[in-house]
Length: 174
Image (cartoon, rainbow, N blue to C red; front, side):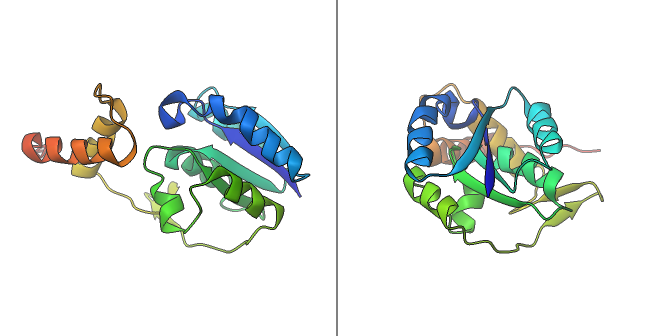
């Protein structure tokens, strides 16, 4: 099985690139057939997956929920497999799907994958989502967590964003 790993350099506060060498060592040690693509933008993720559909069996997100979202939206009507090595701040999708948070465990799973079908949601007959869809409060929380200037990481920055948004959120009329 050929694996295309989409590395999102913006995930994990920009630290996924620092993990690339460790990832490659693990993949080589396990004898996996892979190529790593470092994405430049969300459009690049989409375009890279689209242009490689015939070249790979497995498309693996090395990033957060957003990276996985863009991969899934290209591959939804194909027979390709989607996987994830969670490297985001929250990793809600991976947690909900019981995907290990440890890079080495995830690489071992790539060696002997546990492939299963999952349900997707569809918004406006256009966008698929894996876990939760929302707008309003949760969108403000997510935006604040991803753009906070405080030196918080992972769940702590989301907790901060929830509390701050609880105090300041006002619904938009219209």
